[in-house]
Amino acid sequence: HVEVEADGARLTGIEDIAPLPGGQVLLSARDRRSGVAGTGGLYIADLPDFDARDTVPARRVAGAGEGLDPHGVAVSAEGARLAFVDAPGTERASVIWGDLERAGP
Image 1 (cartoon, rainbow, N blue to C red):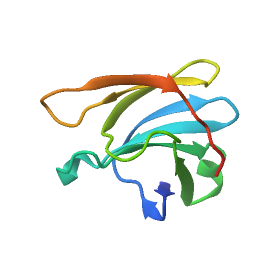
Image 2 (image 1 turned 45 degrees about the vertical axis):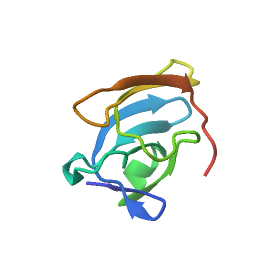
Image 3 (image 1 turned 180 degrees about the horizontal axis):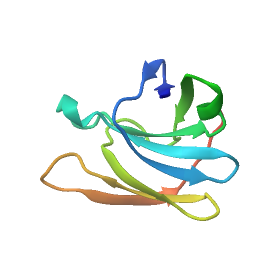
């Protein structure tokens, strides 16, 4: 069991994970039990940390700011593009795609 933290807080509701080149993973997270829309995000963590630590640091994907409710992630083979579903509720959902900006920590 490993905890994941970003911005000084534990990530709740990690539901999707996609491998990235270079030993990283992309995480999709949102606490759906909270009932509050727009509280999720996309995060990158270093895969080796999952074997070496009890708490893994993650960083928010550049350009994937506040107000997301991500569900499902896909990454291109070279790790440069991503797509995910932004599902803020039961009324509608959008597929979002674009360049994956992999800023450093």
